[in-house]
Image (cartoon, rainbow over all chains, first blue to last red; front, side, top):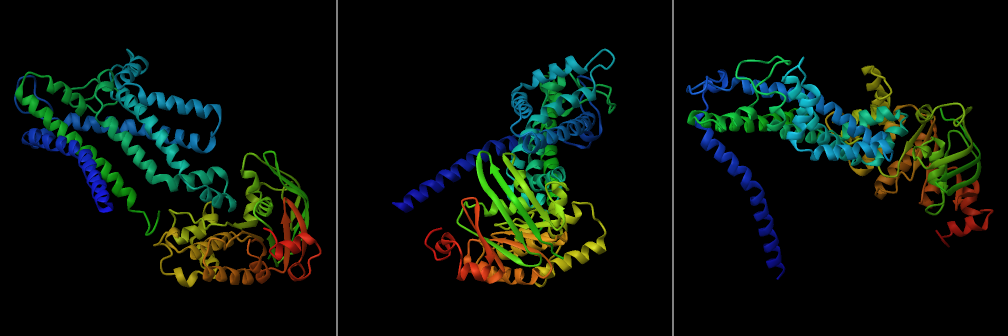
Length: 278
Length: 252
């Protein structure tokens, strides 16, 4: 009887694991199946050809996505981490902290298209029309709540004994927070940043009103800029088969780039970890 | 060199809880002083008042005077300055988990702005030798995390970390209660050696431990200090009936 229960529980666990992994694998395999054939040198080095012409590439969109995500990270990660540190370490129990936490949770639930419209209303003006900067701001704001809340939770998981150890050495509280608590929690905080990054990397809606898209080469921050999700959206709706294929290829490239970026950060940040560190 | 501690009319509260009531005593320099008593009697609170760690809890409050050497710690100095002069070792070993052995020992100095490599190297080596850990870790100082050591080694690492900032007083809050007997006896040997250089105050549940390491012993009960005398007197001929009941195992 006990073996049977054990067997049943193990099977259920294995089955659940498969159900979690299956959709991811299916998406990936389908993307490779549909998109890999359109990947060639031109895809990575050329800009889109005019409507109806075959060939061309998405170099501008790949670089554009890179620029937008770099901007978003520069805005979202520092503000998000600072917010998390405030919530966990300095504002605990205060009204301001409760307000910040509530705002972050609400912000997390705001549909991304609404975020795009809000940034359009606030940042996009006649003097600065659709621009990379506006797109970066929209994505950056979307990163803040995830980063803030994971940072807060990871800091709260640092044992009280570790904080006490630092204080008992005569280390000022701010120094102990920055050098001990945040450092101890950093693997979790980095994971939170990567989650936020991966989430906004595929966002299309907030970019429609802000970065807008650009079929020419542009990396200027005050000009409209192209991005992979925008190109996927545009090409998928186009009447031409060649552009459909390119949309699949772009989707594949986007997923691979996200995986590569996340893996790179994980690799770089895990190199300094010592033997036996917990 | 260690300095004496003079405590006058010390009272402490956690919220509405009056955890220490009118404590008066003189702790001699360069000796080990043990504080014994049942759980919740206030002995841990008392040592936490000696380095102002008590007040890191927002609901805690203290009144009275504590003089360490000639410094009135509640009048003349900031908490961070006191804590550099009064080191503390906690009940459970608490090394910084992400730091190497070396960085754990150097943490107090590095985080307060010292960066001279040669001086740091010297201090780390001296502190680890003083805490009798050097021979066990000298080959992996920067390779291994402090958390990778055994419990007893971690506790000696924490002692080294406290010694590295060159305190005058070392407070130990049940430093061996989470350790096995072999590690415990190493810690006790260590206390014996360290008291020539530091004033040591050790809270312990283990009365044999108090008898082994300390010259003076104080007995706490319900937030008050019942008796403070030489360890020999406390354990052979206590003046107070309650002390006698406690050390003979009638309660606690």
